[in-house]
Length: 381
Image 1 (cartoon, rainbow, N blue to C red):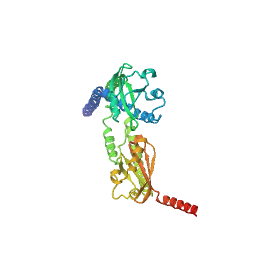
Image 2 (image 1 turned 45 degrees about the vertical axis):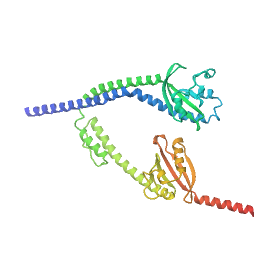
Image 3 (image 1 turned 135 degrees about the vertical axis):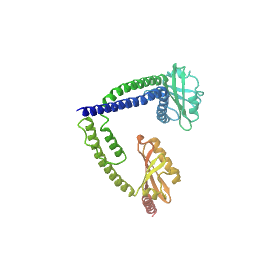
Image 4 (image 1 turned 180 degrees about the vertical axis):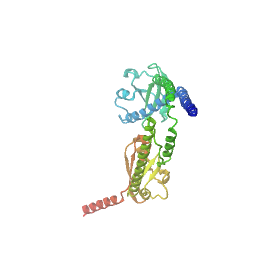
């Protein structure tokens, strides 16, 4: 009777060692990841938030500068009204400055006092904008007695005026302080939760987890033929059943997507119109009609359009589609053909991806010319 007790004792000791190793490993992992991350975030959060604030002001400023450029000719009819109207949407102080540095309007300064403001031509952000750049600067504003983050942008080409946005820097500092507090509280909570969960989970994670890990690794390599062992009658068994169900459904879905991809590739490849996916000016994929219509030979993927096609209209079309995020279209004559070029941006989440279509309009244009010649001849007769 002593042998079973001995082996049971040995198994219990080994299992406790496994539990201790899992407990120490999980807790140590959380400490080694949370503590450096918290220290790094505490050190860099202010700088990163300031950079994010500058980028946000630049994006907002580009939109407002475009609106301001078209608000009136050559200047807004009511500059003071314009800055006060757009202050709320921009969530920033707005200032319009003449190219000579004179302030035209300021959303935080009454119109009657604008003429008393200093000339802004020497301000660093304004000087940068006058050079055609986007300038930024952190400085104390004597007008409203606050430390402000300034971003200035040129309006128009040639420069008609300067649009400057300003954000109180204390807003960024308060956000940084809140972020630091959240980081440290989250780190402390993670350590506490890790200590509790490590002791709880280490009781039953050691046995079936190895089999599930091996199965998951096989699935990550694309091997869906792996079979999981019979699951135990507990929560971990439910996880094993769910993983096995996921394996079956994922294998079926990947096969379905593969078949759909083949169908879509076949359809696109047989289109008479040229179709190409362009990312940041480079061709990602194109159908045979695209190369045929543009007289391209060899592989066009991973090449830029500038290398392959030597006319500027296509570059201007892509730039317009990416910057404006709207469909663009133009028609060019190329190698004796009339080609219609259409650029369809795929949206902001896709980055600078544009779907470029090339349609041969030669026949239609020839028919139009014949029709015009016929009408002209009939009118002459």
